[in-house]
Image (cartoon, rainbow, N blue to C red; front, top):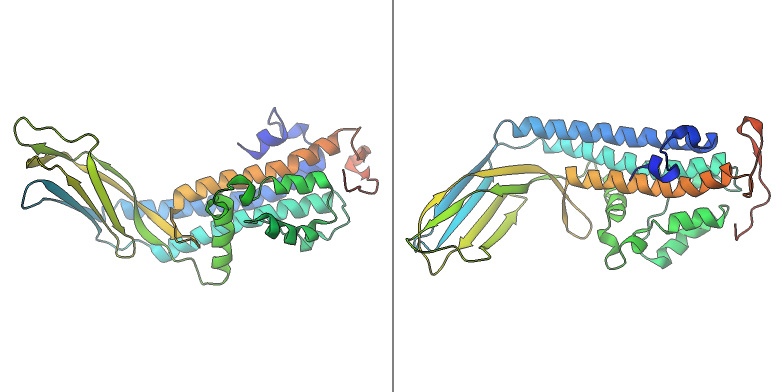
Length: 306
């Protein structure tokens, strides 16, 4: 889902009200900057991956009823530079939300100081109400558009685990540190290794594979139990993808690339939710706005129910 598709079914900016299109362009500058940082981070990590810095070592246990796979990162990745790029991408996305709200307030000429506005990302209804006082000059339909996109609404069971909540948390952490501390972690293992068992034996269904990860020391350990059957040999290969990973305030690890992709989506959707109803009001002659030629308009005094 993109900003364009949320505002206009035809995804045609020519159909948007000029003020909405201008607000969209301004907020999109930050999103494009985030995309550039994401691309730079990806290329940096990809150049490191081309060096084949990861090795894997399979071993059959002494009793031959299990096998182990140890994966190690032999050559240190460019963590410091990649972490800075990731932090900058995060900050651009968080700022895009603030700028979109500020542009709506400024171009909508609502009785509120745009520079003082920050798009809230709350984990609870109580927390949102504490931010709501800063939104008092906005009409209810815009405050509702913001409310619908709060982490406590989008993931009631665990608001802190929602992408927008993690985005805000990581951005706050980056503000108080030189850069976010990323680590190299195994993001994906395409293991084609299959134990060759003794004659007449077959693997249990489902396969009994367990994993242990130590991101700080850059290794992953996997073990498959085939008891009571014995392993004669191991056949196949392993394809490993290692990515930059970050830990959120809850202690959960997130691969940088996949997290940023989700953050782009959630940020664009939230901006779309904000701009879409405003575009409807600006473009509809029956709305509270009386549009005049030259993209200027007269706005009646806003009512709480509007």
